[in-house]
Amino acid sequence: MTSVLLGGLCSAQNIFELRDVSKSFNVIVTIETCNENKCNGKATVDLYDKGISRKYQTLFSDDFYFDLNESRKPVFDSLKNSVVFDDFNFDATEDVAIRNGNSNHESPFYEVYLNNTSTQRFVLSDELTNLVHSNSGMFKTDQERERIVAYQKNGCCWNLTSEYLFVPERGILKVLEFEEDTRDPEKVKTVKREFMDYKWFAKTTIYPRERYFKEEINENTERN
Image (tube, rainbow, N blue to C red):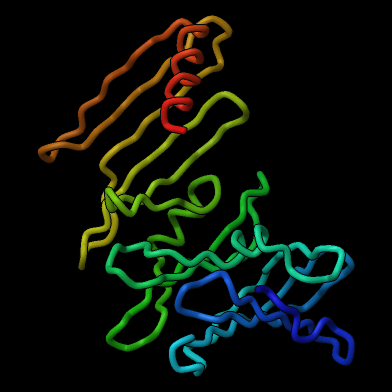
């Protein structure tokens, strides 16, 4: 359960304990500014190891953010978009991304940290942080396929999905792009680019608009 330790009642600081955002860590956020429905601004993010109840590390954000509910407690769905725990490099340990600002299109920016188990420290990954900044918000992970999936949008009608492998000692390697262009009122254009055998291969397909969206709806129904 997410609980508020201090909500600015006796201090200029606003301190919140976030218990359910990680399997391995409890999180305490001290944030600069709160009003009735949100907190934002500079923040310190203290991580505590759940196994030994000891502080693991303190991280910082210049532009943190989360929403508050009517009881002035953090909204859980908002927290999941502010402190993101996941295994980003597929080594079976939790890594973390800390929200730090927004792009011009209001997509959140994050600083991404990888958990170095040998030193027991989260280390900033410039490469993964730059991947967030060059796309539309935080990337996702496909744990089963061990791929990082990033998204770009341009208005309502152009999308690009990119997939990356995480190669130990080398970093990320792009292996797939899928471009979807629905700007034409009568047709949809898709381009699939795939990296295989050290070469890029591309396939362009043009669909009648009605058929494309009908097939997409059927595919989503089957998956659900």
